[in-house]
Amino acid sequence: MSQVMIGLLFLWHLLTFGAAKEKAPFCQILESPEFPLLSKEGDVMIGGAFSIHSKITQPQLSFTEKPSRVTCSSVNLREFRFAQTMIFAIQEINKSKFLLPNVSIGYRIYDNCGSTLTSMRAAMALMNGDEWTVGKSCSGQSAVHAIIGESESSSTIVLSRTTGPFKIPVISHSATCECLSDRKEYPSFFRTIASDLYQSRALAQMVKHFGWTWVGAVNSDSDYGNNGMAIFLAAAQEEGVCVEYTEKFHRAEPEKLVKVVEVIRKSTARVIVGFLAHVEMNNLLEKLSLHNITGLQFIGVEAWITADSLVTPTSFSVLGGSLGFAVQKANISGLGDFLIKDFWETEFKCKETNNDTKAASCEGNQDLIELQDNDDDVAELRYSNNIYRAVYAVAHSLHSILKCSKSQGCDRTIKVTPWQVVESLKQVNFTINNGDQVWFDSTGAAVARYEVVNWQRGSEDSVQFKPVGYYDASLPPGQKFVLNTKAILWPGGKTEMPVSVCSKQCRPGTHKVLQKGKPVCCYHCIPCAEGEISNSTDSNDCKKFKPELNTKKHLMGKT
Ligand SMILES: *[C@@H]1O[C@H](CO)[C@@H](O)[C@H](O)[C@H]1NC(C)=O
Ligand SMILES: *[C@@H]1O[C@H](CO)[C@@H](O)[C@H](O)[C@H]1NC(C)=O
Ligand SMILES: *[C@@H]1O[C@H](CO)[C@@H](O)[C@H](O)[C@H]1NC(C)=O
Ligand SMILES: *[C@@H]1O[C@H](CO)[C@@H](O)[C@H](O)[C@H]1NC(C)=O
Ligand SMILES: *[C@@H]1O[C@H](CO)[C@@H](O)[C@H](O)[C@H]1NC(C)=O
Ligand SMILES: *[C@@H]1O[C@H](CO)[C@@H](O)[C@H](O)[C@H]1NC(C)=O
Ligand SMILES: *[C@@H]1O[C@H](CO)[C@@H](O)[C@H](O)[C@H]1NC(C)=O
Image 1 (cartoon, protein in one colour):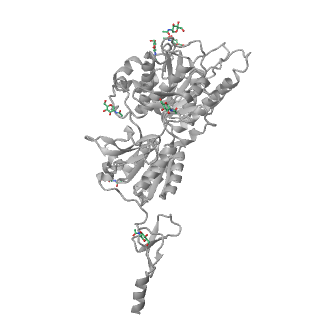
Image 2: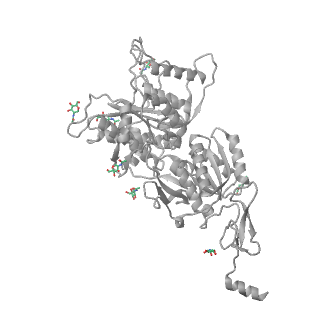
Image 3: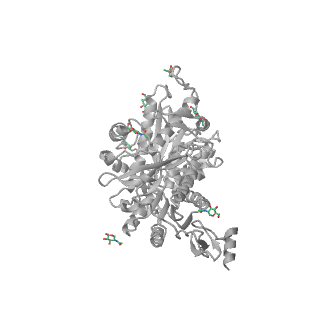
């Protein structure tokens, strides 16, 4: 690993200073170039970085020879579809007579294999290109004009920080960490999804709405999970919701997960807020199934609530009835056919030998070739729309930089710099053919719009992510958050809402007494003292009973 890092540092050095040294004799990539998994040349180039494989195997380091490449395994179909969608959108724009009429768009898509180390290599490759460029001086020009990706916040942070000094725009379709809203840290970052600031607060409002004042909280130990959970916890406190426990783990920490499951098993909260990436949710789900921990009310985030990979024959007993915020669905006409039929024939040509082509070799990607026959259900294409919007946003920016018009075509003599694309992206405001309005707010994010979905039984063994409400931050106060409680099915197929409180309500005639060292939601109900009353539930105290005058007289008369 250390040798790989040294290689990267050399690259960094070349990138930063190479361009400045005008008389540099030549400029050369020290390591062998990284080839994109999928690529095509064009007048303008868009990069892509997705985690098409989700596991890496580090080679054994002998320190006697150059370390071999990391190998990637375990195809992630969802991420593969993101790459396919990106190509679909590019082809559509390429054919358009209105958008970039005279300009062809090319792409380079890299696989980061679910590792931030490989992400770093992909980021370098996207900037450098894969030419050996021996004998030439570095042009200092990036090989791509914008980068679409990545899916997870942590790898997006690596990508944005790496490309940031070169002002190359990065547009993510699913990185939601509020930390990425900082314009000083990430001046060229954009996203076609909202920051978690809204989702975290909406989660707290939902929990409060159902009267669940005693909840458990579990999050991924990542930028996504930690930031999202911190905002939720602050909002929950404001709403008067108490949290019995907060636990976190990372996918690479199975021992920690065992501990988390133990905490859940011993807890009394019936509701769990899971701020988890779908990988960690999958790990947790497996463990809960194994220990028959079922019937809990899960409250989920956009990252897992509609993840197909969580739907297994046994998962419904654990996650049935889950409620959460999902990225809105949208129709992209022609995409379904493209994903199933057209893609393989036209696009996926890894080459038996990759001497000449700029595609990755088939050898390491046999599993992708086998996928061809996988006729997976493509009904839930939620994030794909975000990819689609991101590609269109880049195209609209380039369209305005190149001063394109339908009659005159584009001015192809203009040399586009990535920073121009950044500035132009800040201005875009357009409508795509399915009616979606696309623009970025001052932090570079899209407006927060979610669908509230509920895990219900579909036909046979399938799971239906039934819409039961929505959250739309662009609407006026009072209309932003709507829930259709009657349509919800609760865990265990029940029609009755679960109750999750630390203490039962105090009846009128009693008052709350907090328990020392326990959260404010845990209390005893003590009857009012003589001469005092409380006429509402959950009274904090009893009021002195003031008899009215005539009653007083009557009482006095009696004595
Ligand atoms: C874009 O269009 C040109 C000209 O029709 C074609 O040669 C090229 O392959 C297309 N590129 C993509 C990415 O579809
Ligand atoms: C879980 O439930 C199944 C069937 O109800 C049972 O066979 C299994 O032993 C249980 N496992 C545990 C860990 O309780
Ligand atoms: C998508 O298209 C189908 C059929 O054309 C339609 O029933 C559905 O309402 C559309 N969904 C959205 C979100 O527009
Ligand atoms: C690929 O390169 C190797 C060595 O660089 C060479 O022996 C081989 O003939 C080349 N194959 C093709 C198809 O050009
Ligand atoms: C496309 O661009 C070329 C070269 O810049 C130009 O000669 C041609 O007229 C353009 N075509 C259209 C249809 O705008
Ligand atoms: C985008 O344009 C629409 C009209 O086409 C306008 O209503 C909306 O306010 C604009 N949004 C921004 C952020 O400029
Ligand atoms: C409780 O008593 C107060 C004052 O006596 C009165 O204003 C209030 O309406 C009563 N509340 C209920 C729920 O009866």
